[in-house]
Each structure stands twice: as structure tokens, then as C-alpha cells.
Length: 225
Image 1 (cartoon, helix red, strand yellow):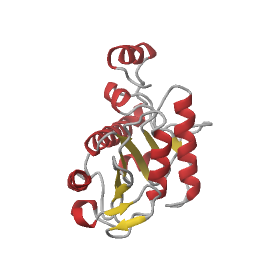
Image 2 (image 1 turned 180 degrees about the vertical axis):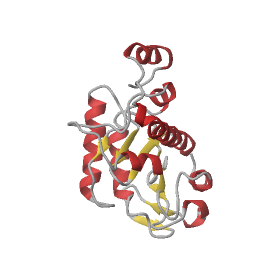
Image 3 (image 1 turned 30 degrees about the horizontal axis):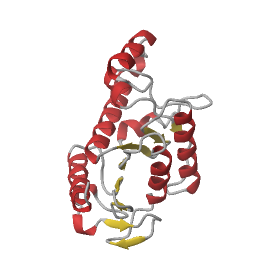
Image 4 (image 1 turned 90 degrees about the vertical axis):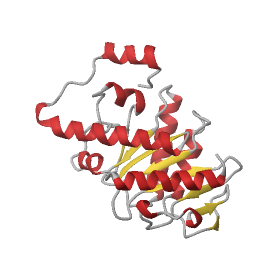
């Protein structure tokens, strides 16, 4: 993707997410890792529904800002995601972070366990399109400890042969990554809609997909679960 194409796609995806309620106010951010080195990212406190391609922050490969409005403080986290995720998928080119309502709601009473996950395998498309979503314990927005925890989790899962494409920051929101802004947006949508289903049905504690069903998804579609 060219830089101009990246600028247009970030703005298109931001407007789409905002119009459909996946982001609100000035929450959330989108970045793209450019082919020739460096990054584009939405400015700090920008509304994703009203982005200007010319005002997106342009950074070099070391994260130094070259042009545009001041970069979102989450660029440090995004850069750690790119560095860790590209070890297992060299085509990782876009990171999206939102404060999606249903995902955040699930973390207000976080699941227990040594390495809890946001959701069980409820639907085939959640398994195929999203996969495991580890829950990262709460840190303040922009905290370097959060970026370190996310990078460790991506590395640990990847080295175990189960690479991930999303994590959930407790009380803040999901981070998803993929090869294009459109693909990252689709992953984010599937994650948020599965969280909504889980909240709608939680009183009944719906059963997750069986191990046999998940094995079939792996065999038929290459699901990473």
C-alpha cells in the first residue's frame, strides 16, 4: 500500500467505524506500517469519524514524527505490536484500537485464570476470523507496561504455535491487527459482535463450540484456534 493509499484507507475505515458505533467521541486510533518504512497513525484526540488524510501523523521507522498533527500516544503500543506480530506474520500492516462498548463491558468483571481470555469460542466466524483474545490486565492509557505485556503475549502465543491477531486491554478496549485496514476492521467488527452476543446470552451461559467443531474449522478453513 502506498502512503497516499494508506491515508485514504485510514480515513475511510475510521469514518465507517464511527458511523456504525464501533468508536465514539475521540476514542480509538488506527495505524498503518508503510512498505518503505515508517508509519501513519491518527492524531491524538482525533475523532475517527472526521479524519483528514493530510493531517494524519507520519512517523519514521524509529517512531519519530515527520509531519502531520501530533501522533496518538498509543504509537508506542502499536510499534510493539508490529515488532512482535511480524515475527509470525510478515504481512501485519495495520493496527486498530477502539473502546468498543461490549468488549469493554466484559472486562468490568474480568474472567479469572492465569491468562484469561475475553471470550470462549462461541461461533464459527469468531474462531475463524478472530481467534483467541488474551485479556491484558489494566494499565493507564499509554502506559509502557501495557505495551510490554501485549508484546510478551503476542510472542508467547506465537512461539507456542498459536499466533493471535487481537488482545483486549482491560477497561480500555481491543487492539486488532491484520494485513490491511479493511481486514483489521472486519476482525474488530467480528470481535465486538461476538462480545455483544455473549452479553445477550450470558444469563443462560451458552455452551462454546465443541472441540470436534473447532477441529473441523481448523481442517476446513485453517482457523488459528
